[in-house]
Length: 596
Ligand code: ATP
Ligand code: MG
Image (cartoon, rainbow, N blue to C red; front, side):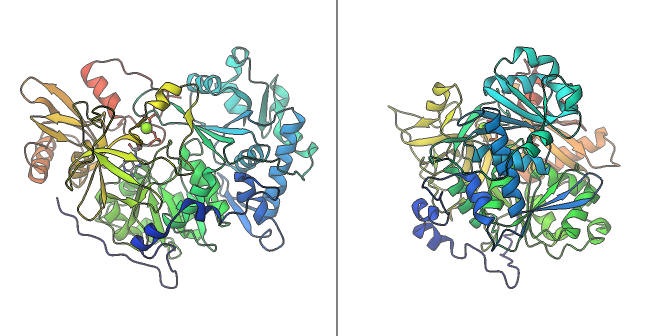
């Protein structure tokens, strides 16, 4: 499979923040990066001070921080000065409830202006914020509230009624439930968020905060198993700032939109914190995905930097195939858009090129995890793009590809690991600990945390290869890689090849045990609208994949499935496809989309 490199394409008049990759990598230090932040007036470092208070003065206070688009499309704005007052009110409100340093405040909210108030107000009060997906069902909500020692939950009346009310009695530590919007009066044991806010003062002095104080608790997506609660500290803001500078190319005059759900790490690090620390205007869309709505927001709000995910891009691709017609995007003025980035799962080359053709800009893939807290590997504005590649490590990030053992993970011999010695050999991606947003633990699971480190490296569980020029290519999760007739096959490569066929919308690929080959590749495929599944189409897709991938790697079997199981952050759940196929227990499904 050959995809042409896409040459860098920089908007006239905008100098990228990272112009010379090699130079920036050799000059960079995290301590230098920290000097771009203000720090608390009395010393220490607090995320909320960097995100709001320091922009709230006379120079910047009138600038729009949030531009909120309600479900009915009504637009309202919140300035930095107003956001500073609101977050101070919320910090005071928490204090009035006796909630303080280190106490866990959970949100079960969609993206709405109150979310920003709660997140940043909690951080001002030096509490710990833990966001949940609002689409979670009662079980996963209860499980996480319990696992995370929730003291406060901020949600809406409807969500509380459906997901928490009848579990409340068993959640002894949950002292306060605050209801955003109407309805608190009818719900015993809850308090109105608005009433609390209006009773609180809008001036608050952030107490001394150590960079090592716990700030955020994030449950991982649960793609591979039980969700883990990753702990992040205030120092993470240094990494949020620096990586948004380089990997998202944020400039002060940008209008920025991140489509990630606030329940997921991306929705927090890059939906709330990083853009506000940069002082840009953030678009907050309260609505759900809809191709027309999204194109309209991009156009009408003059979005210039857009951070989204492969699953969202694939939905847009369904509505607007690369072959055209482009009527839908063309009916909006997308001329302000100058940079698009994507994260969460592999970005098929097809999607990168689709961006170029349909939106006029390629999509810049980047890689990171809940545990890393910030973007680690990325395609940069000022560099050529190799479609299908995650890019190169950010300045300040030391990455390595480690030789694999039998189980697909890094091979450890006498406590030591070894790097692969040639380009293009797959191995486990490892990162040298020490960047500021590195997770500081899995809550209540020290053993699992300790097991993530070997021989001075953090082991990511992902398999990658590095080409001769230093670009990283995702191969698969160590658990997902298929061993077939002596080959190691990354599901992503097979999925991407299938997606090049015009009938295919999405694909999920697994290994099915086979007496001869060990495993054979089986693909689950969803089709573009209007296309019917048929034995002929199956034969055609099998032949298509064989031509592209060769017989050793191509799928042997294809099943059509219009509802591929996905996590709420949009990843195809291969472990579930595999479990269903093999009749195995399906494991923890709390993050399965549609399970709530
Ligand atoms: P769990 O750890 O609970 O199984 P998860 O790993 O899906 O869930 P996240 O931290 O949300 O939870 O996702 C990080 C993972 O997502 C990465 O380890 C990688 O497998 C995948 N990922 C993220 N970005 C990319 C990308 N650009 N290309 C390929 N894979 C990616
Ligand atoms: Mg993970």
